[in-house]
Image (tube, rainbow, N blue to C red; front, top):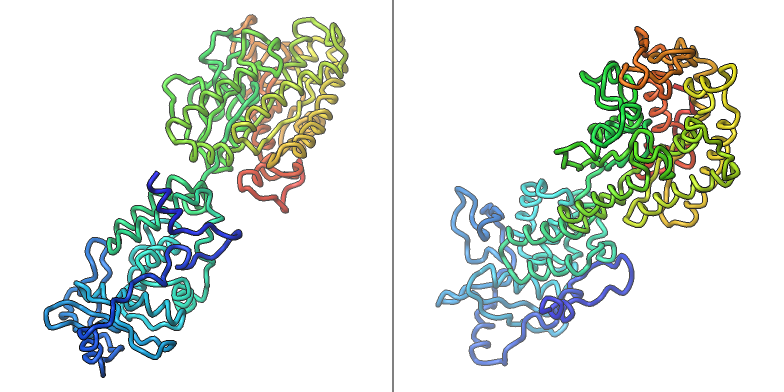
Length: 586
C-alpha cells in the first residue's frame, strides 16, 4: 500500500524500546529546505536584511483557532510586519526568511513564501536544526500553545500527548522545546511518544505523518489522531482509571439469575414463583433464593448493574457481561441431563457472545473487553448430588478419585476454552458441604449427614486447588481467586448466631424434617410447604440454597477476603491486594 511506502521512506524503525521520538525519526531536517544558487537578487536581499530586528515585543494577543489559521483575537489590531523572527515582507507582498548560521559565519537565505506564517515556520525549523534546544523561535507559539492547552484538554483523556503531538507534527516545536515548556508549565517532563509502548505502531505513526502533511489544519490533526487511537489503543488513553470491567458468570443454581425460566425443564429446576425473590425483588426472577445471589453482590461491589441472564429473550445488551449459569447444571453432561444447561453448553453460549462482540466492537475492543473481564464459576455440586438423588452410587463405575478427576477435567476444559479467547481472571467457588444439606440429610438414615458426599466434596476441593495452581504456572497471565465456601458454610451451620442467623440447619421454606423436602413454593411434585416469617434468620432459604444474607456475606469475603493468591477486588482492579478481611470476619 502507498501508506506503507511513505512510512518506510520517512520513519526510521525504533532501535530500542521506549525510544524518544525526535524530528530526525520523522523527516530529515538537513534537507528541510534546499538553498538556491547565490544570485544578485540574493545579494540584494541579504543587504536589505542588515539591521533587521529578529526579536520584537508582541503587543497583540493571538488566539489559536481550531477552525481557522492564526488570527487576531477579538479586539486585536493588525499584525505587524515584524511579528515573527527572521522574516521580512518584500515590496511585492511576498515574505522572505533568512537566518544567521554561526557555524558558517554567514546569513542563510531560506526562501520566499506567500504568507508571514509560512516564512516564520521555515525560520523556526532551520533555527532548531542549527541551534537545537537553544533555538529562539517566534513567541506566538508559546502563547498560543498555552491557550490551546487550556482550551482543548477536554478533547481526550490523554490530552498532553495529543496536544504536544499536534505541535510537533505542525513543525512548531521539537521535543526539547516541548520538554522546556513542560518544565516551565508544570515541572513535569514527560517521556513523550515512546512508540514501542503502543500496540499499533504503524497506525500511530501514520496519523502523525498525515497530520504533518496537512500543515495548518489543527482540527483535522486532532480528528486524525483521536480516531486512529480509538481504533488501535486498547488501554491507557481510552481507558480511564474507573472504567468498569465486565463480569461473566458460569455455573449452577448458586449463580443462576433466571436462565432456567427460558429452557424446556420442570419446576424442580426453576424458581420463578413466590416466595422466591420476596426479600428484594418485586416479582420472582428465577433466582434460587429469597433475594440476590453472590454474582449480584459482586456486580454491585464492582459498580456494575445486575448481570443479565443470557437466555432472557429480547436482551441483547451485554456491555457489562452476561450470566450463563443454570440451576442443576454440572461439569458433567450427564448431571441432570435434559433439565439444565450443562457447563459445556454454557461455554458454547459464551462463544456465541464472543462472536457478537467481535462483530459489533471489532477485534481490538472485543479483545480488550475479554482480557480485562472477570469470570465467575460455581460448579461441581450437582455432579456429586445427582447420583445420590437418583439412587446411583458414585462408586457404581468409578472410584471417588476417578470421578473427581472427570469433574475437574471438564471444568478445566471450559476454563481453557475461555482462556483461548482472552480470558485471564477467574473467580472460583469450592463445593460447599453438600453432605449436610437439608435435602441430603432427609435421604440418610437418622437424617444424618452423608459421609460419602462429604468425602468426595473434600476430594474435589483439594483437586480444584491443585488444578488452579497448576493453571497459574502453565498459562501465561492466568490469575484466579478461590473462595472456600465449604468452610464458610460449615461455620454458619455450626454456629449461626455468630454470623447473624438464628437457624443454621433448617430451611426457611419447604417441608418435612429440617425443611428438607424440596417443596418451596408448592409448584413441584409435593405441593405442601411452609415458609418462615423472616427469611434472613435462616441460613438456608430452601432445601438446597442459602438465603440472601448468606450470599451477601459470601460475596463480601469473596470480594475483599483473604482468598489466595488474589481476592476478587484485586482481579477487578488488576492489582494484588495487600489489605483484606480475614474470612468470616465481617
